[in-house]
Length: 123
Image 1: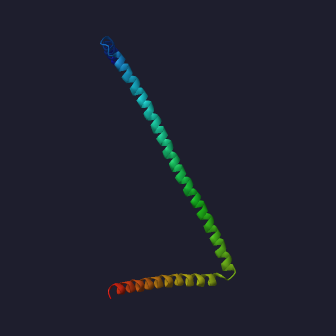
Image 2 (image 1 turned 180 degrees about the vertical axis):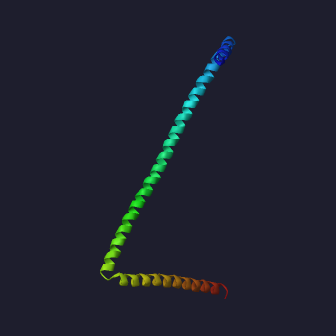
Image 3 (image 1 turned 135 degrees about the vertical axis):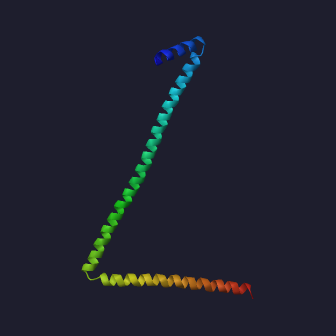
């Protein structure tokens, strides 16, 4: 019954000279839908490639990190075996303390410079 009604409407449109306009509109709508599907496919690929590139980069970093951890564990293991662990630990603590002292010294020198400049403008 729906097909009959559609055929009847199309028949009337043909008789009224509207068939050409309807046909053009239908072709345009069909082409538009195809273009939208192509655009969605391209965007999907771009998203997929973006995710793939991000994952690939992350996987490379993760692999490199794992290798570095393995190497560090191996070196620390050797140091422990050679009795060097205590020396390394002491050295590391001294290096940390030295860095803190340098930061404090820079802060004090900065304040002294600031006070010197301040004094020169207020005399």
